Image 1 (cartoon, rainbow, N blue to C red):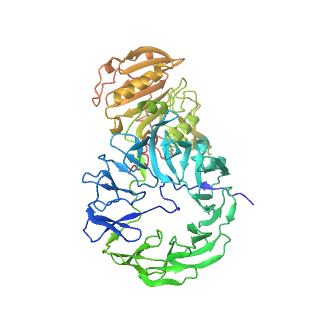
Image 2 (image 1 turned 90 degrees about the horizontal axis):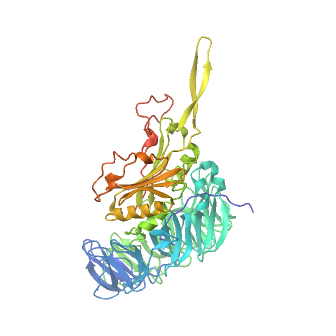
Image 3 (image 1 turned 30 degrees about the vertical axis):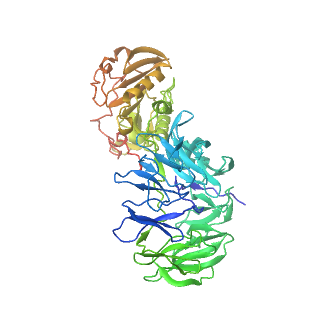
Length: 612
């Protein structure tokens, strides 16, 4: 069979998965403005009206609830809630495993057991600090160290090293990821064919590598040995299924626009008008006539909503026979024998697989089976040595940037370093002598500049000759054959660096001193000769500067940094590291065909980062 070639459409770091969660109790309210209680998956009430803020679901006999200060506290399954331990957390996740991820204020990410005891502290991997983590799926939690993702188990052992640009959470015993060796091709549509996505087992072994192509996307999550793949070459997307080798199990067709759920050798599909059910051989088991359709996670049962005005969900079997006589506004899946459903507005009940009501000794105004607490966790601790290691400072430059690359290659490297926030079009640099961007390391925002001694690009002119006239016409733009004179980073004082600016400066100073000969030094600044180039490091109170390249070492005065107070800016007018005038060309006359003018390449593009 011909292999599918797919352009990655990753789900990202999600804690959700298809495998059934071992939920024991769910948060509920018995009246509209009431406090929250806990009710079992069988409809047995543990307690009512105890918490102002919604708790998480209970698994492994534990759940979390927020106190009046918005901090998470740990609780067991007692009829009268009693906090376990005294620690309060800024972030906490449900006990999907026997341990749960937490973040205590000002500390790294940790895993705690059911007694609230710290079992694992997520520190470093190969010198890179672990700054992010997800909750568990199939025994693994995704981590981010430096710029890349990997996985750890509940003991904190690294199962898959953080060597991947993108990953999806484990499902069906498999993980889909893109290795960092392909990172340089991802930002360029013309080079996507060089990229492969990797399928790994949850033990870390590579199962396959499959090439990518522009017109195909993959869903990023396996279920029952298959993964959804999309053909986007036409005007309307078409969906199919592939196996671990990227081979078609079910080819895309115009009858299947999307595939939303896979279960028991069947899947729910959308044909552009309605939802139905099909098997892996492409046989239609239920015609796509429903407005909404979901597996109930009870064998061969579904919740279906007909395509008619004011229709609600009913429980049906694969022959489309209705189970029971009621309709429901909202449905939860079956957890064991029963499912919670909203029969009337703000009136929830429990039903069994025959659609019969389960006797519940309370009113239920609201219930939530998806309250998992936090699902993505962020370290509140900065390991300054690990942060410095992330810059990859060396004798030839930092962050993979050197003064030996030409302008075009420097722009391409800056684009990778700054996650695509830097334009790669030559016309954007006609009146600029620097390539500027912003990156994030260890959750710290960092400004990056590659500085040149001349404008980086120029117009390509074509002479137009007429009978009575001639003139030059701009027909394009190209990068000049020049190299940067300096690479510079600036790290501003920000929340995670509060109180750590001096410590971080010292770590940078110690690192660059190990690379060459110290020319000038004081407590907060250093100038180091490295071959034909030099490093300059300085703490300016509100920011730290690290500059590499062609520096005028004789005329750089570092005395202004002798006594620095964090948060108090230093006058740096006497420590200009520039070897020449590197202004961005303000006041120059832009080419009339250049829509970028003077501004576009100089403006930082704010990265799209959501830490909520």
